Image (cartoon, rainbow, N blue to C red; front, top):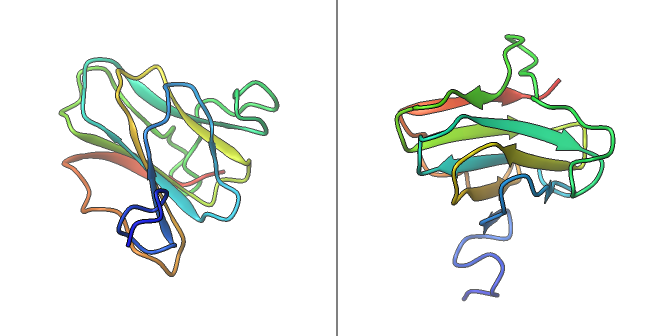
Length: 126
């Protein structure tokens, strides 16, 4: 039964709809995937030490294996996904996107997010 926070998923999965530019707290979570239903404007991931994404900011987050920023350009084919695994800073946010944005946080041993959309960018954060 739903506890109001995890809907009908396990305690290893959490859904939310954060405001554009608002940090999502990653304490206790391994990864986050953002679903972007509109491809009108560019979308980029940022991380920081505070929820307002103002202290010790990394914008954009750079994917460690390929050295590419985790972002989608303006006019991407919607829906799009932005994902980051084990970010070194506590808060992660989607910047400069057209709302709404849906966030799916998960733990390594829990339920994984839905299959990726055709437009996808993500990886481990540096």
